[in-house]
Length: 116
Image (cartoon, rainbow, N blue to C red; front, top):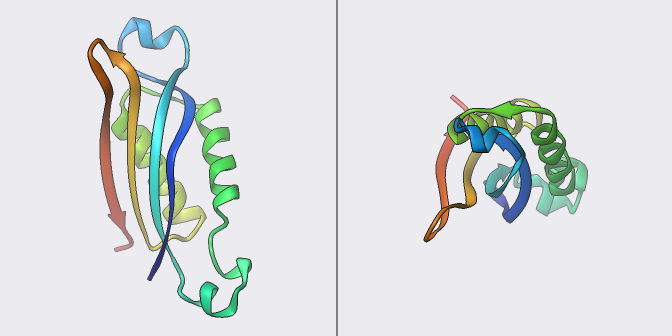
């Protein structure tokens, strides 16, 4: 299996449980790695892989339209999207809130799932 990764993607998201987090979207940083079929490289054919530009656009759109209490829920949502709609056999995501606590660069979660 080959892998595509997207690193340090910054997206505004409506996520959080505290009142201050519910007032306005906040910046999250996403690192995403997902499996893709080996055939894409062998055939040099974009139609046989997952187009990362489409993934990025879709994640930005979804996060602009939805609200999540927990980063864990947001992560599971993106993973389900990758597994079910994009057909990825394996996905690993880390999502962090940027600058959410004084003296802390990022606070986040990391989730890894594969097809069962």
